[in-house]
Length: 148
Length: 148
DNA sequence: GCAATAATTGAGAATCAATCTCAATTATTT
DNA sequence: AAATAATTGAGATTGATTCTCAATTATTGC
Image (cartoon, rainbow over all chains, first blue to last red):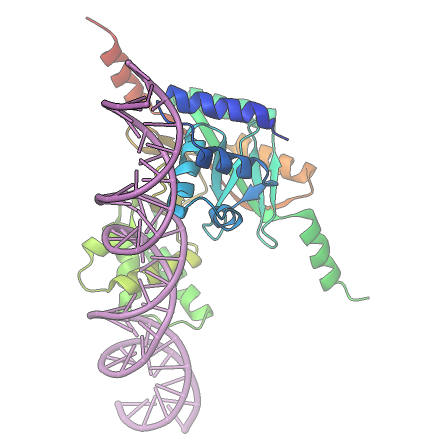
């Protein structure tokens, strides 16, 4: 879980450092976003909020993203899915049910650094997505295919 | 480089297996795509082709993608960039000049399989993008920042 | 090869997410 | 509290992509 108070401080610090105003709209959207469980879409934010305009929601999500508090990934169907940034992690995406599983592997991180170093590339960040079938969907499948 | 003749066979086989027609439009687009050097955008195909309609280009690129001959990645600016599928590889993307560097690392592949196995996830494919600064842009930067 | 059938194409309309415009409003600065 | 600067909202606009459907072309069965 993310510390809301800390996130708000990070956000307001960011806004001040950029000479941007601290507005109720921006704080409302951040609050809404922090209360989202896991992953959410822009339309979720638009639907759940009856006060802030669509344009401001788009603008504000970009601002929150610039502040480093949220980021998005793309599903197989090219949908933008946002999430609150916690510690760095990568994603497994189930092709059957769409479930997004987060994982982190230190070996993967160091291997990536090695790969970059050997090619003179200076990495700032990366994304890795593994598509496949999650454990639950594997079970369903084998049940379906196994006659009794 | 990709063997064009083999690619055409793979494409026509795919079309037949799906009950789809083999049309000059489809073959033209595949031919154009195979002649693209490296990475290309849909608008490149639209511009370079004066015969086939925009709608058919969109439809056909999707068909060629379904046939497994091309795929796309997203840049930092969310642009769709297509490429002809060769052996599997991942990407480094320069945040300064936009250059796309392909790489392949067997250790990375086996590590991914290990990670999936330990979580009961059955992988079908993955994408990995490392964002950062390419060797050439690093050189430019250090030159700029170094007074003479 | 030829008719019957099925699939594809093109032109432009439609859609959809995202962005822009600009006057009205609100936050910040002094 | 006034002056200044930034933001907001409503709706228009954009731009990429998809859809529609009549006309065209490919495939199938003889």
